[in-house]
Length: 327
Image (cartoon, rainbow, N blue to C red; front, side, top):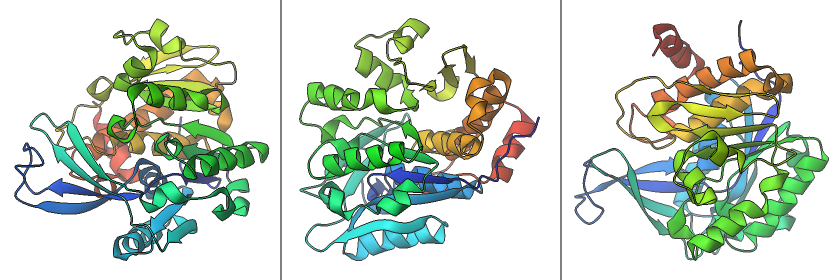
């Protein structure tokens, strides 16, 4: 059974794009790092590029600083075939920066420079509504909910996409250091919960949102809402669990040599969205959904084998080669 990966429907990704500064040496703290390499990042932008890398169509909506880094990031989107006519530039604020260190275990520590950064200053009036209305899938995170005016822009974009018939895809992508408090993060992440058709959370986010340390079906289903079509819980090297109204199950991960987990979840989401954008009936067909999720897990796995998110995002051929080789 072949999965259609030459998606023609447009996937619009909304939110932040920034520059991650990654130590030149792995396994050290930020203070110990002798130097840093700049790597383009930001979950929604990663998803947009993950889609085009797999042959899909995507656009990015957000705001960058009218500075060298902002224009560099816009250039990277364009080089990767992402439509850039939803991007605004702010003359007064800088492009966001994040210093990210990979600990010896491959997990990450973050330190953010946003006071405020350009992405936080996107206003509802600056949105390219025609572009948003043309989306078959509208994808977003939660970092854009932290402060105004970006929060209002996010809510407006979501409403316009929904009215135009888009499938709404939500990956909260929790970054606790950016929120005023854990309570505020939980409240705001949940504030738009029941609008989404597809939600993907990591095991860590599941624990955070439910307040339980159990990663089980009961815990996951406590996040279910009546309008939801698909809930995904990603489990890192253990694969993912999926839940729909009619069925639930799990898909195993692929075993690879992990170098850097950055972007793995975004790669997974991009692969999923590329495969369902033109055929949402997949969400009601367990056999086909499992096949798509296996492909998405392969994409996520490949992304962990190289440093940085965007350079590591796979092509369809990369993913098919891993699928063929099995786990």
